[in-house]
Image (cartoon, rainbow, N blue to C red; front, top):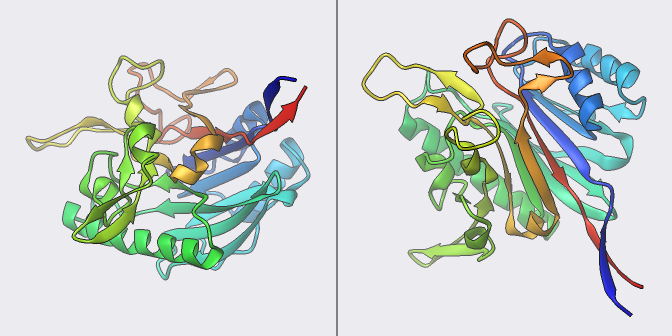
Length: 283
């Protein structure tokens, strides 16, 4: 009798900062191409009801837009996933949902944090501390930390708010995240795993970031990874993969220079990630 590990059908989620444009048809095509179960949009230029109608018509009639007390982040998902909102912050920049998948409950958080155009690096780090605290509070209420956070963080994976212990504490390797937490000054801070570290530069199969911006000062990263998915160590056994999308069908989202083409899509590339719950069977 040998033990085999089989995977349930992966849960596919996509996130896109639409750059204040109406990208309904492109979103629906991407959702159909990837068999997306969850669609999260930030800065959508389309009305949520219109986007929902497009997803139901073009992808699957089972898509719903669960009620939310904020309008900044639009969340759509299959009706059997629940996605009921259990927390939203006063600014509408964080929404936390319950997600039911393969008989398990997850916390699914969508975020769109303030831009560097208006906030300093220190402001952003301070705001992330509040966000991180609220996520941990919801984990306490639900009695587990099977948490997924996706969104436009308006910070790179290496910036203070994303990495520091009392921020998101998001690590670049699974090996570190699997340690669970780190203690600083007698206080325990849980890790997130941030797979987006692996997309920087041109030694990757895709683009070197999700957003391009050339600053006119001395410090300019040029390419940035602002759009990220983070998962707690408890989710690592289910985390399948993540990709930065540059093409939907025959539609190129990148201009000739490789940067996001805001005339075709958005000034951000979308990201798609998957979860797959393993089940052990004897054969």
